[in-house]
Each structure stands twice: as C-alpha cells, then as structure tokens.
Image 1: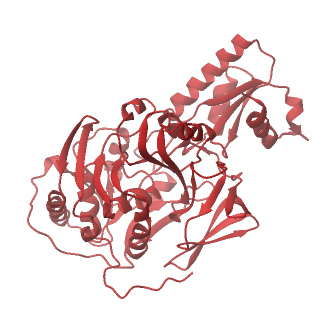
Image 2 (image 1 turned 90 degrees about the vertical axis):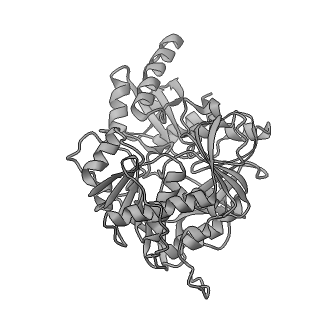
Length: 467
C-alpha cells in the first residue's frame, strides 16, 4: 500500500513537533509535582545534545535510556532523535533477572551494539548493572555538569532509524525491528486523534509498540494540556491512582486493568495492549471510568492496527474494528497480515481472526504462551505445581488467564490450600503478572484426545463451566 509523500522536508521527528503549550509535571508521588514548560524542556534537550556530542556521538549510534518518566527522560529522547541516534527499547525479562553478566541472550544480542546507556543517577539494579556491562559508554546525568548552550544541529533524515526493538520471538528467532523517521512521523501524527487534556506517563520505554502509540503522539497533540510523569503501575500501588483525574492512562495488561477499573476515575480513558475483559466492561457499565480502548498491534507493526472499546454496542472482548486505512489489513486463511505503509512490506502476525460484518473476531494463537504480557515458563510452572499435587496448569491466551486442573479428588479445604500455594508460587515467579484465575478437581480421562490432553477442551470447560 503506497502513501503519497507530502511536499515537505519535515518528515522527521524533532522537538518542533512538540506542543509548545503543554505543561510537564514530574511527580515524586501522586500528591507532589514539579511543573515545567516547553522552554524548560527545550533547554534540557540542548544540554543533553551537547553531552552526547562530548561523548563522541555519531548518527546511527544506539542509545538505551534507563530512566523513570520525567522531563529528563523526554529531553534524552528528543536530544537523541535530533542527533540521529537510535532509541533502543528493551521490553523483555530473563529468568535470571539479568544477573549473569557474561550471558548475552538472543534478544539483547540482536540489539547490539548499543553505544550509550544513559541513567539519571547511579542506579544499582541487576538490570542496570547488566546493561552497563554490555553497552559501550554509560552516562550518569547526576555526575555531569551540563552545558546549556543552544544546539540546533539536526542529523536525522527520513530514512534514518529512529527506534529499534525486537519481535517477541515466540514463533522462532526474534527479529530485529527498526522504524525510521518517516514512518514514526506519520504514525505519531495519525495517533494524535486519541488525545486531549492530561496524559499520564507511568512506565519507562518498556514496550516497542506503545512508544509510538501512546507517549510520542500525546506529546505532539495540540489538544493536550499536560503530561504527568508519575510512578509505574503495579498491582501493589493501584489504589493510589483513585480519583487522579487523568484524561488518559496506559494500562498494558488485562489483570492490572481489571483492578484499576474498579477505582473512581470518571473522566479517564484507559488504553490497554491486551484484551478488555468482561469484568472491566462491568466496571465501565457502572461508569467508574470514561472508556477503555484495547489496541491490537505488535512491535513489528507498531500501531494501533485494530481497536476494541468497552463502550461498543453488544461488546465482546474478542471483537476488534479497523481504525482507518493507515495499514493494509488482510486475512489469509484466517491469519491477519498487515501491509506496512512507507516500507512496502507485509507482516504476518500469526494471530487468528475471522471477519464478521465490521468486526475482526480474535481467536488467539496457539504458538503464543504469554499471559499479561509476560512469557510463561511452562516447564518451571509445571514443576512448581506438581511438587505439591498432581495437576496441570491450563493457559488461556484468548482471555489472558491461567486455570488449575487437579487430577485427583480433593476435599474443598485441600483444594483451596493447594490452589493458594500454587497461586503464590506463580505470583512470586512472575512479579505478580501470573496467578490462578480458576481451579477445579477433574477426571483427566474426560479431557483426553487419543493419548494427549485436549487443551482447547480444558480451556472451554474452565471458561464456561467453572466459576
């Protein structure tokens, strides 16, 4: 699908795109904030550009940003982009929590070399130590005396990479995903239609598709009045977001969205990168929040490609709609393919859909075992469960849930005891992202297909017959 280029030299991303009237708030917590203007941001961008040049930066160098949401983080992003550096996004974890400094995993290896790792101060987490060990030059802002002299140099061009990340790798070797300035420029402009008022930024640059779907379009939208840089959403702190009055909040995963949807944020639109559940829909019906929008896309397509809304008539969590004609969308044997504008390439998503009038009905993907955005370590979880009791964990990627099937008849108290122990083990292993949604004692022979356990039969049983 071809898009005609505008007669302009401005198909690149620079600070000139930023809404000059936005107020930036850095919140140490949700009750205290420090306000900044565009002039404050622009001055900091100049200082960071001068710092990169002092460290010998060249167009095409990769930069990894290890900062929490803040004016400093935004300044680093735009300083890097204007100098033609490539924003590198790491949106994956490792079973060893990055403790093995001598082990370069396949996804990190794809992203190498990374020239700069830039931090606010001397962070000491395992992940930061790991990337300090493999990046060529670690820059700690708190150790530097910044030069705020004007820096108007622009080393970016339309075809030059702006950001890079990796694909999920669940169907094979992870792919190196690169998006250039023109694609990012056009996609950001297209996505501005979602935003107005106040936009909360709660996470580091931790997802390749959300960078261009949420943060970057919001900061250039003329109807946005405030960017609030605040703390990361975690299951343990969600109640702190009650009555925050943000107009927009990105809540990546279904489990977190279900919990925050129970709060009273009447004017807030939530954006999620996973499914809107029936529980979230019920909270919307009670008018706890304004809207929930589920974006379908990937690191390769960025996006959004399709969307679903809690406010849709006859809502169904599996029913998505085409947004516009930015992407060329096709179904080949019920597998969604996406034609990429400006690249003239086609991405096979491996996601199964069926067309039903205006809807694309999502049927999941058998090759992907990922719950609430985090990969499932099937062998480890099986061992955790079976060290306690004879059981199987059942993974429902369509509804983003984990069920627990006990293969022996147990008393109710014993069922609850073992389910609680396994649930706790999963939460500890996944930082709260994986947990047991339903459990029941079953007759295994009823769920066999030949010599194999029929996973789809089990999923449907838990979905429809277990409370």
